[in-house]
Amino acid sequence: MNLAVAPSRLLAGRYHLEHVLGSGGMGVVYRARDLLHEQLGEPCSRVALKVLGESISQCPDAHVLLYGEFALARSLRHERVVRMFSFEVDTHSKIAFFTMELLPGVTLDRLLLECPYGLPWQELQPIALQLLEALAYIHQKDVLHGDVKPANVMVGEEGIRLFDFGLGHTQAQEAMGLPSVSRTRFNAWTPAYAAPELLEGGALSGAADVYGLACIVYELASGRRIGPRTSTDRLARPAQLPRHCWPALRSALAIDPQRRTITIAELREVMASSRPRWCL
Image (cartoon, rainbow, N blue to C red; front, top):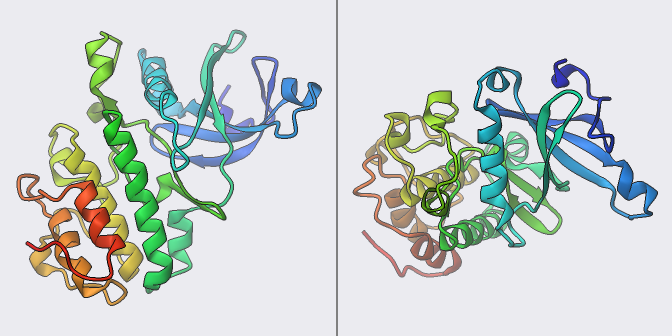
């Protein structure tokens, strides 16, 4: 049975699916009630529950991809990163899934739809800094997100949360000999935010995450997306972005990863500063 059209389905005798929160090229996320927690009187009994999308679920090793995402994100403990709960399999339907915290707010892509000319700097700056904080943390933990885009950023009253590590990668998984699959064969990159080298089959790197973040900041400041492989020579500074931030952001948007030399820490320093401290 296709879960995408059966949101009332009960999984593992415990999770009652209420409705779809979002879907992408690789998975579907539901809002679900944890009936066990309800019976135990837990005040917060709702979770987000992710299953593979119908097309991906037909692949024989699809469950490896889903578990890989869960295992990668499970070790992350940061207020700007989604928190994972458990990985389970419904024995009756043989559907694998994992649960995570239900994030309040709206995704950044929906917020951008309401701001066609971008956000003023006083609203943009906290979002950019918190996203940079999240990326700095996961990179410190040797994790690469791989799919930094507005649809994977939740904005709520307490700030932003980064989620969806389905295209992520960590060196620790390779070192431990854990199973993995090639994300590139699923063609799941979003061209407007994926680094050019990823679209050409190159390896995921910290510089690719930097590029995705820079695309988000540019869109937040201008209300416009950057087209795939758009040269920075053809881009003008967005009106909402302070002049001293533009050289750093332009470096982060470089098509050639060898020229994308600015780090997350350097970009955060510039975004947090009221005067220029970094230049090309």
